[in-house]
Image (tube, rainbow, N blue to C red; front, side, top):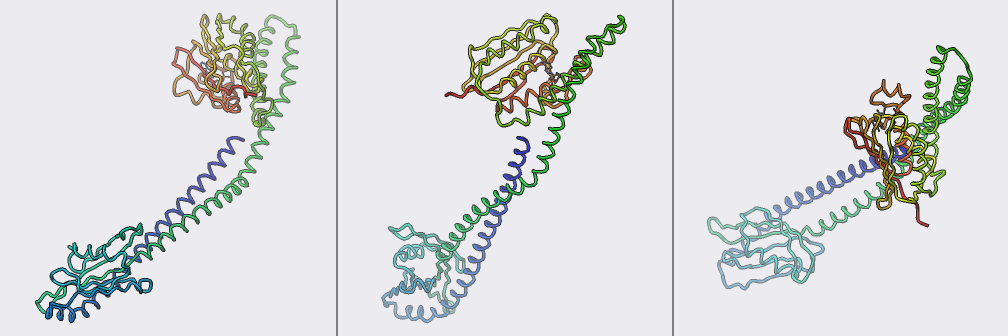
Length: 431
Ligand code: ADP
């Protein structure tokens, strides 16, 4: 069920991110279109405005040329700044401002400075970002100039400009509103996605649950007849030939019984994801008892086992699961090692974790098999494993147990040199 929940979370997060991406792209495209439209429209009207103003200015500049003694009369239209967004400057050939219609006295000094240093060719629109002295406000202008001639006589220049700052404020409001909408829709999309994903996954969850129940019940039901068969075989007295057949049957039944009990544990363990049967206990003591129970099997193959363990290492776990886990690893280490070899079990503390390593000197595992050995019913050497009554359920079960405890299981190995299984499990919770 953990896997299904992970898929559900991945689906919801994936869809929400996709919706956020689409909305950001749409908002950015909208913002850029808005900017483009306002700038091009304003550029067009600015050129029309320049045309009108330059017609009207010919007479005035001619007059000035006749009586060069007119004092520059700077008229300021600050009073109209909210209703009217344009500025006009008439400049004489000696680069002094003859007359002006301005917007705001705060910004006029900066504009005049720009005009003084103006190097643009006639009719080329310039974008200006100007800030008034002693103020943080940035003014955004489009400005253009035109040289005025009377026949071949150069009379001066007309500058017109338009203030785009109010439109910038609208754009920034648009951006704020877009961000708020994106956040709201994303939250909404997350909850709606979560609702529909949960609904869609419900039947899958149910059928997986039923399948697990079936495996659990079937393996539970099979255990009793297998035990009966086993004890019946033990009771049969037969000829030496019969005895050989009975021994073969006995080992097949034992293999089948182990498979069935592994299947049962796997099915049941997935039903108990909610830390059922968890408690604090001493991992060192448990490891000692597992080693003792496997000693006869190891002795048969002349394999020695050493256990290096920190004393009284308390962990928070399900004791019967951890016993199962250690038995699987030690059983494998014995099964896949030759005689006269050594197995070393080391258990130590690392930060908030207990670190268990089971190292053998057996056949080892190829690197490309590292992931596969944790898959159900996967065996590297099928014929050999079958001979040993193995079904490829040990390591998947070990992995399941470790995951249930929020721990990690890893393997390190070189072919023919042995394998080491390393596990981390959480330490006991402090009271
Ligand atoms: P099995 O019941 O076959 O042992 P497992 O799931 O426990 O099933 O292991 C899967 C496969 O991984 C085994 O068939 C074996 O090939 C390989 N394997 C597991 N442990 C070891 C080990 N300690 N050394 C070498 N190979 C191993």
